[in-house]
Image (cartoon, rainbow, N blue to C red; front, side):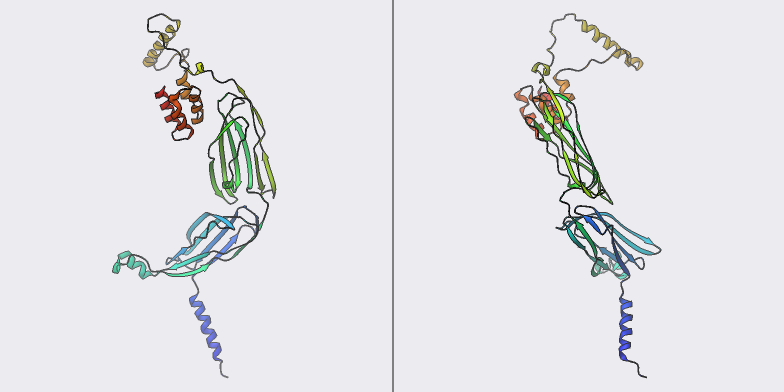
Length: 368
């Protein structure tokens, strides 16, 4: 019985396929089959080599921001287990649009030779770069079903609103701090807006402290305000709306409104330094106090401790208020209340944040 030549061709083709099979295999997984818009989903890609894979370099850098999604690298590693090389890539993906999302990313497997490596190491024939044979391919496809909800923020959050006082002087700044903590797409938080009729509101850029987690970005988001008003005002409630991924429903946090009482403004004489002492010598009762303070300091220099009954006199006047200013805005208001033209340029520099608080205090002392 004659054997069919077709069988030999099939055997040869099968043998060629085995010989040409790549010494590595890619796999992919997704943390969940469906998600809501802006909800964090974890993607994991793994390349396993049959051996150490010493001759291979992986060029894998998927697009990070498209119309359909944005993505952040969560973790990347390379290790050897049982003599076999394993490369892993984990990403956080935030879908932007409702509907099915197909995920398939391009990558490049770059293979060199041992001769190319040796020639590069010893500099043979002026060889400076490795020779590669590139194989273009794609990651295994993944599918994600994305559901809509109409909100910008997704995750689990808490919010607090704190005010520095319940009563301030007219034109004295009230400091307000808004803190949001939680986990989700926190980098998409938008700054709050305080609208207070009759008051001037100043706001700083939010401070963000995030770390990446399997549920998205975890950490805190802080925004600070300064409110200056001539009369009583109401600190309005602030609202934080988001889609709660734990309850799978929209959620809202509303802070309580707060009544702030504004008392009379500082009188100009309260901002002035005490008048200088008369040049002629005359006895005053407080001289005895200064003498005792001097003696106490002398004793402290000799025996190392100041008697508990002797206290440093409290600083008063304009210079003390300048040193006590806690922010550029507070220092600018203090200088404006003096109605001194010499401070105008300094006030403008403080309000535009061109100089630091420490520099502003130094210039104020020199100008005074």
